[in-house]
Amino acid sequence: MTLFQIFDILGIFAFAISGSLVAMRKRMDPFGVFIIAFATSVGGGTLRDLLIGAQPVFWMKNTDVIFLIITAYFIAIFFRKKLKYLNKSLFLFDTIGLGLYTIMGTEIGLSNNFHPIIIVAIATMSASFGGVIRDILCNEIPVIFRKEIYATACVLGSITFLILHHLDFNETIIYISTSSIIITVRLLAVKFHWSLPTFYSKI
Image 1 (cartoon, rainbow, N blue to C red):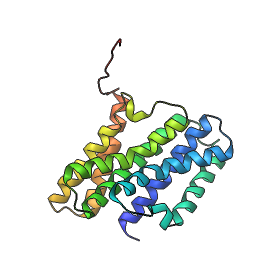
Image 2: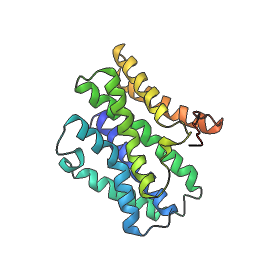
Image 3: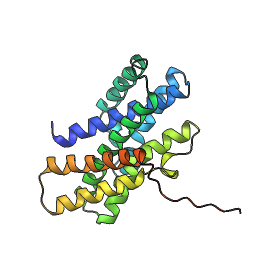
């Protein structure tokens, strides 16, 4: 199993846990929790594949993805009482998924020889769109549209990936550096209350 495949598995797993936690916090039934977990974990990758014309999309070609989501779903269900601090757990898994999916999106963009700007856009959408679907289905304003540093972290991570790749760094160093940048930025943004400015109009 390659490092790319390992990170892909971890990203799907992390987002499935994240979706499950949000759905349980909203007191959804078991089926509802699974739907949110599924949409969160494959939403970004599905958008990515549709944009680059890869059909059928990745989870339709590999049923292991479905079983991985089911596994994450049951883990979240059975260990929900162990997760005493749901908000912290949600933030952790969401941030991990964000970092890993940014790597996947950037790698796939590079393999298709897209322009760097397009690669960063694909990576950001791939990483954040699952969270957008999750929040919309759970009747919340998506994190990406709020003041939180979310998509910005993906952009910084993807740019870091491209720079290190251009400098011919080892794949392992690139992957670890990219995910570390995203996770660190998210953690620091929450700790020190960093946020982007908002626009307000009386219209």
